[in-house]
Image (cartoon, rainbow, N blue to C red):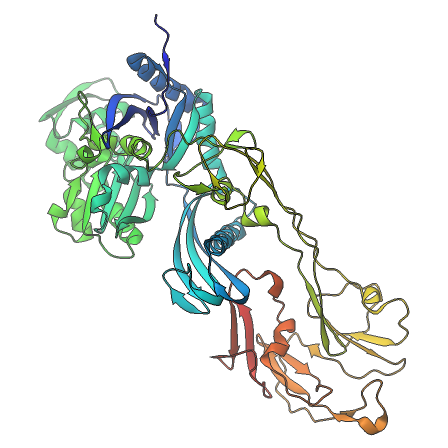
Length: 634
């Protein structure tokens, strides 16, 4: 037997790992289209997939190897690199915000925009982590910017605008680490190296809805065996995707119950719909029977209506609460007789606007021998088209710390983007300085800064790099995460020094000398034996009372230089607070309360809301008796 050739750089091998079967496709780019050379498939013998997610890694690996072997024998090529897609079942979407305060008004550079967006993505992932009972790893699939703001003014783009404060809101989509790892493990078990990964709904859309018609508001519904993946586009880009766990298996199970047949026989009967008037079958008792196709259609009517209702509900949700202009149904389940009409009915659309996908496949795919316009090919063709036509690059293999990096898309990728796709946070790349400690000592705010972060080590091909370095196919990345600095820490003794011999109160209370100070603590020192009142923050709001003005002799001043104190009673974040008068008799401003807000202004990750009596306020606003002040992160 002749020795098989190696997989050439432009030879694309794609595997669609489905709930019921694995489909393999091989082809290559040819004159702006994807030339389909071979297709092979095999069905799982047992239920090794649950709702589109791998359950039995070894069984999936074995079947993937079988499909790969058939393609290799047909083409005489040893296939080693594969493109795959992850099911949308476990997709998690979260919003995140981030802001940057610039030292002076300046033009916004591309680096600043990247830093903003990375911070917002990290904030989104941190939001996800807070919702989990235990820490999980998430992989960034993609994100979109919801809003930029510069000096609180909304903008479509920040680049080259001038300002002092830049903000961004993003919507980021993540896959839990276990979903990604199980897919990689199965491919490794089949002897294959994953060279790119995308999402099944996006892959199917790349096949069924070419870019030139995505200006329209369209939906692609890929109905598999265990899951139904949905993607929505408008104005040239994918704007939303989701997944329903109702799919083709529900139709099969309805036939099982009605005709008392096993799963495989019910599948055969389902596939015969639209092809035969009379459908033979053998029930679980071993009896050979024949039924009319119409009776089979009646047996699945209720399940089909439920499927159509679920599709309509999820399409509407992904499309912002309304029906799209048109819907394409793909996958094996799309061929079910009458399903297009049912979906249109639940979406309250014209039946002509819901159609089976396949008509547009020929815009991107050509084949001399294989019929490509079949809806079952939407996802495997989409994976291959994405790679072959440059939407993803099959040869885009990058090593991260000696192992192939997980890539959900390709093209121009920065080091920052690759690291975030592989589960690292922005703080791993930059490192956070330790939180500062802010206290007030004898009326003067004092800030102790935390330790600086130990910077990350970033190298590409052995050369030092920045997080904005563009990474190319074949590059080798070495990355050691940054180590965040320790937070500032001070005891009362360290603050005042060993030689201090007077009295001291912390938040109007006597405390041990070795007490560690907390953010916002108010410390008042005085000569031995004297104890004037210090600022105190109360835990429960008392009834508002008018505090009388008192005269008090400031420390280190002669009696004849007494200054009038002006105490102030107000509410900060719904908690009552009494402030003593300032030594110089000046009023309190909103900015004076920042230190009591418990916000770490050195490490902000979102905008801060400033309200006085329910209205937006500035730092210099003078505060009055019984004012209600809000200082909190949005």
